[in-house]
Image (cartoon, rainbow, N blue to C red; front, side):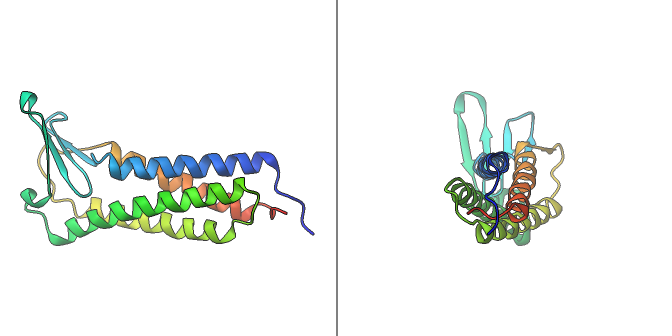
Length: 163
């Protein structure tokens, strides 16, 4: 019989998994993977938002950018991967907090993190390159989500079984 998982390890895993879930959801829901014209145009994985003073902000699709279909599909994949990563991380946190074995959720989280990293890399790599576009906070949030999710999953797999 294995010894139970130590409390500091459980706390680290739960906190890292929940932080990854929040970062992944904020990355794709908050949009803003690129910023144009000093925060007036924000480009996210599934839409763009234009704010023009008193007229307010307006969301549009990504079609106005004359981007390739691959880039638009990569954006959709990034959006879905970020939400799936958040779901898997919540599952790991809940399972570990409940004192159950979390090997399967941890493995799912590793796959979700790799998928999110691959989709985001494709999305960034095929960006149509608008002049004046600067990286936005969505890229940072997604990177934090992938790293925190991987840390939580690997820590779960390396920790002693919860008995």
